[in-house]
Length: 206
Image (cartoon, rainbow, N blue to C red):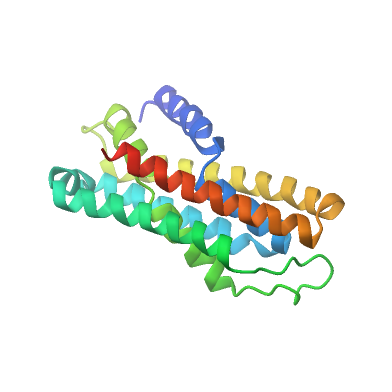
């Protein structure tokens, strides 16, 4: 692999990753609700979802899916539906803010993990990002699997670093300023934003 291209890939990936989006918003919300030490499953679930998406792109499956209008539309609708469902749930469902006791707002680790995994795996943004850059970076004359693995691990590592930073900032904010009433407003605002992300995806489909 051309390491100059790898540096370019890492730089572009970092910019794409830190841009506010559903994964960042979901992680910040959970960090404010539960604290930084409880959101590791969320961060790892997002990373695994991105890794699966990268592997699918590297295997050429995404090209096959995009070649079929029906399959690609189904995938896009699944992403829109999941974002809208998460947003609606935040607007309707009451959550408890845990400031003192870890049992105040206990959320199973598997719930946090799969919530983030599905959010990453059903987001067309990551797949389109991979598909746009992989052909520019990967060199067919060299081992494709090893090159793709390096790029995917780079992207996932940067995502973990970004979400950990977001979580630390959210944790610092919650310990100083957050109250149950403010968290409820933040939760509802997060729901509106997630529905907005879903609407944006829907508009891009047309």
